[in-house]
Image (cartoon, rainbow, N blue to C red; front, side, top):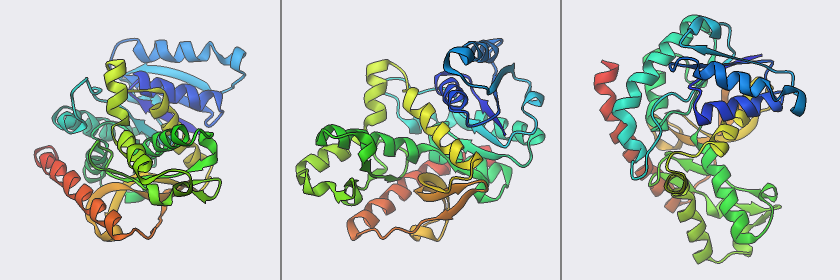
Length: 311
């Protein structure tokens, strides 16, 4: 199985590293526009093979899409990262042209690939990729919900003082500081609702911390985070390549699901060898439905900015 990662920056390289040492794919190609950058990252990863015991072949390429031919999955991380004080929405104008060009180029060499979109603003870039390529909606997946849910479980584990791996929880809606919806009502600790252990005030704080989780790290690091985003991409790719049928919140095209149409938004999906194999209809309460509708309105307003790119 072959995976191409376009964009060899922090997130792309971390994704390649995790895929390699976990043996998720037999081959990973890193591609970047900066001369020698992807080659250097690939070489650095490959020099870990004997010490970490992996057998994945990792190679790099400077803007030569022919090296990506025959990829089963293509991950698009291209675009500029957020800077302190910058919102994901402000990235639209710059990143839209980059993502569209990347999608066109990779499909020339891997026409059957499933595309995982990471570039921000992620829901809008997922929508752009779907509209620009004309691919079936099961083959275009936005990664954000997997990352947001990971951060949600981290904040829950901190509040509970319990291991993250004992906690279940998910975030739906847009992948933005004001559009994501941490589902505190449905979160659980080893099967027991977290509301048995945390007050409503504590749950509200967990939700608020989750929503600004990315911005918090950007403020601390001076740029976007990369360890958790890269690992979240690898987690999603693993479910595709190994047909694991995991339920992962992903940004996908909605055609009536959750009362929305013609929009890519985060909802729980079954992810397998065909990409999005099912959109899971979880029963939201009235407050959650209202929040989801507001999230959709916000994302849809950003999508309007794509008209010139898609023309």
